[in-house]
Structures are given as structure tokens and as C-alpha cells.
Image (cartoon, rainbow, N blue to C red):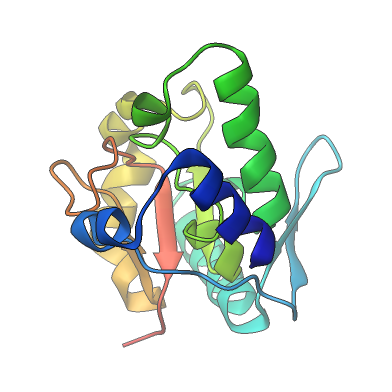
Length: 172
């Protein structure tokens, strides 16, 4: 997590700010398996228990004619740093970036338990995902597979609403 610490210092992100936002450090997962391979051939990796839960949930959804696909899963701390730096280079303010992206070391994606989900017919990573049959199904059934919506409207972390972002915590 040294690269994350360096970035936080560089950008003036204090421990107090992280605590006030309710952000938790997420160490980078080491034991990862392929949970799904995208149509583009990209491998989406999760921890073994999260991958098993994802596959069971996707299968159950499919049995009810609901299509769920992963568009993003594990992301390294280094990749998160690149994302934030790319946005800064485009002229976005750090304040605006941190309403959408977690600082390096604080993204649930590092844990290997988070997925960004898509369904056919809806653009990727848009709030309108919450109008889909897939979202309604997730709201009703994802908890039984251990997945929770991480960033609902008005979430304590101050992130924009992300109806597509779900994180595995463990089956109840």
C-alpha cells in the first residue's frame, strides 16, 4: 500500500478526511480466480468465495431470464492510482474525482470482492441501470448470495449513486 500512501500524501488527503468520509482501507487481494470472461476476452477476477457467489448469483438470475455481466472486478492499487492521475491530467479537480472514484488503497475493487454489473440494452455505468429488471432482481435477491449495493443514494462515503456497484460480504 506504499504507492497508495504516497499518492494520498501527494494529494493532501488526510487520515481525518478518510475517516470523515467513512472510507476503509482495502488491501489488495492476492488469491484471485477468473469469475467471468467478458465478450472482449477480458478476465474479471475475484477472490474464490466471491467468484463462487457471483457465479451462483448469475446462474440464478439467468434461470429467471435476468442477464448479469461483470464489466469490472478486481482492480489493483496501481491501476486505481492511474485512474485518478489520468482524470487529474484531463483537468478534473481532485474533489470531483473523489466523488466518483475512491483514492488508491480505498477502493472495494482492491479487495477482489466488488463487481460493477451490466445488463444488455443499458449503457455502462449509468444511473439508469436502476430502472432495469436486473437491478430489481439484484435488490430483491443479491443479499441471499452475500452481495450488497455499496453506494446507494446518500451513501455515507459521499460517492455518487452507483446502482451497478455491488460487493460480496458473505452469504447470510
